[in-house]
Image (tube, rainbow, N blue to C red; front, side, top):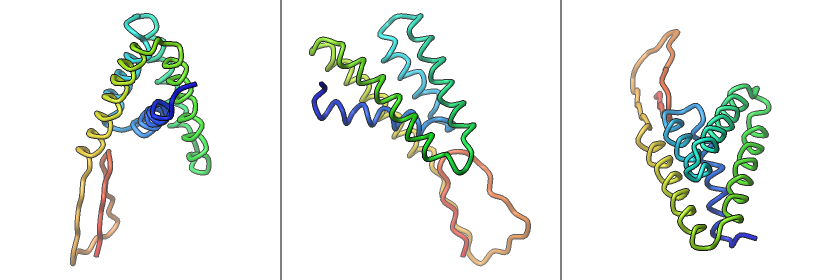
Length: 142
């Protein structure tokens, strides 16, 4: 069984994957997670990329009423894959892979923060308007 810190790390990894899907951070997270899980084997890395693409497709296909359930299920799937990987490694290698995973999670977090947009509209009138973009947006209309 993994120690508590590694369990938290794998949970964060699963969460980072789900949160990045469909955002500007996706390509970075996708390639980083595939690299971690592939462990230097091209065929394994390609298989992980395909799994990650299926995850994104499942998340994209989720209807409004099932989004939270589908997200939670996908976090659990990826947390489990990461736990299995770490459990199978010798302790020294385990720490190296954990550090690689931590770096992917930190990069995903940094990408999410950097892609944030904040707009304030004060005293403006909008008719039949839409705010479009990608990433995290914060719009205040007063």
